Image 1 (cartoon, rainbow, N blue to C red):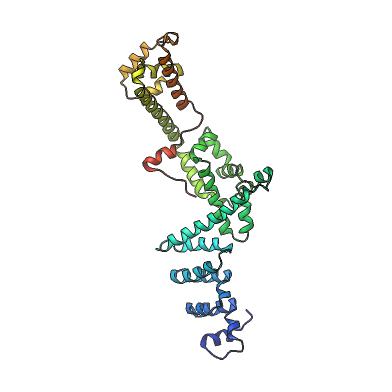
Image 2: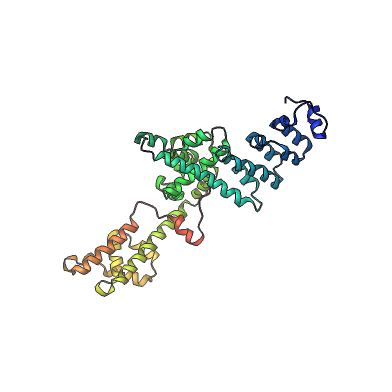
Length: 357
């Protein structure tokens, strides 16, 4: 510090000074030394506006007096008010969101934090839509994480936050269920374990943004919560398969029933006979029975009666043939789709869980 301790003490005690007081109060290091030595936050009021708008000074004060919510709010709000375009705003709001988490003021900073990020996201999206960018450049930029890297190059806190937000955006914007994704990519959880969960997630993100994937490769802790979720999904791997199957068959049965009920006036075919005849042809009659509500005796009777010639398409009326084909399509579309049913979304109606980032 360019001022000795005597000068600091003289200023604190109101003694004569060899320096102009305005010069001292415009020096962030001097005023910080005064406040730290006295622990008197009232000295903040004497700081010049230039000092109050110095982010290094602001950050040190907030760190030192983090338990005094009212004081750090005064310091923060002044900086935010007079620095609308400062890239440090995001980091400051992240810090305040954390420090006010258990106070009534948290909603204010959480909202401002989200607004600040969304503002930068809109600017990024506007840039990515620019007709001046070639198709190749747009593909190279991906989600545009490099924009945040340039804007917040000296703030790991801000970059980590932006990385988490962009990862979350991938799942939301592309309507991806993480658990369903795992089952589409791997037949058994052991395959994922062999590859490595972090490796899989980084390679997945790389499909959307190579810059973000590169950042994650050296900051893997950002993925910790997702990895924890995935570990849970691996433990209930078989439960997911069973649940997915039940949802598929329940949905198919509902759709067939609704269709037949809607067309009962112009269809001579019985729902149960049509359902199990087609099910027999498709090789899924036992699975249909598993999720249907008919008794074993009725099921046995149906299977015995429904031989390969029970429904003769050549002798069907045009209307009945159309209904037969429509029900068959409903069953095939629901039971043999390669895509998994979005189990997470279906369960949300009861007790849904959203992926935490």
